[in-house]
Amino acid sequence: MADLPVRRGGGSQVGRWTRGLDPFERMKELMGFDPFEQMGRMVGGGEAPVGFIPAFEVKETKDAYIFKADLPGVKEGDLDITLTGDRLTISGKRETEKEEDSDRFYAYERSYGSFSRSFTLPEGVDANNVNAELKDGVLHLRLPKQPELQPKRIQVSTTDANKQGKVKA
Image 1 (spheres, one colour):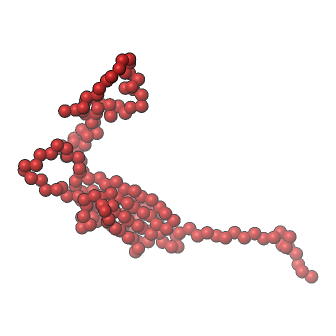
Image 2 (cartoon, helix red, strand yellow):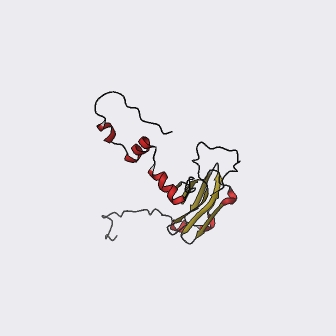
């Protein structure tokens, strides 16, 4: 049964209902209806979530591109990482757990299934020295930059204007 909002005190509630609140959150609270969940069911065709979509974090340092992905429950053997030209593709799957006929679910919010994410990289990735590690459910992927394409600091020197153009006799 959906939780019903409790209203206390007198006066108008209009300001409370309209200021700074997300209308979808209000609809979910009042009616037990989540429009995004409903859209997911229409696309997925069932009660279960649409699929497993891992969250990624991508950053650039001075010498590498670093990718991190939350992949809880994904086994190393179920991951496939490829680098073709400037295209990095990370794909894999998270298997559903075995269910017994006697199991009775009160909530089913975890998602399972296959995923695939592709990223276009800038030129200059050293494809021969890429490092990938899956630790504690987090994928750490380091793509180093080629040394010749890393920025180099150029020293600027000044010349003394009084010494220029003078010839010693």
